[in-house]
Image (cartoon, rainbow, N blue to C red; front, side, top):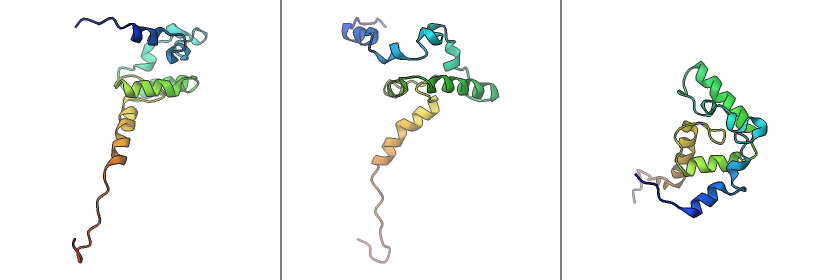
Length: 116
């Protein structure tokens, strides 16, 4: 599939005020581009080793100034891999499903002795 040149999208991604440029994982003071991506994208999310890596990634993220922007982007774009905004893919799926549950109409109580 060929990528279509989109100057508006390119400006949004490269604009200096884009949240990604303020992300701790991109900031050179904290290792920036040198941060191991596997920290945020573990091969598995199960087992002691994976849980320790996810905990380490979340600890790194918790000190980031753009957690909310990162999480919003991950949910809106459907990121189903990696730690984004201090959440795992399963945690983000739960966040995406939760609002739908709140919109479900409540079941009407029907009194068996006085049906409608």
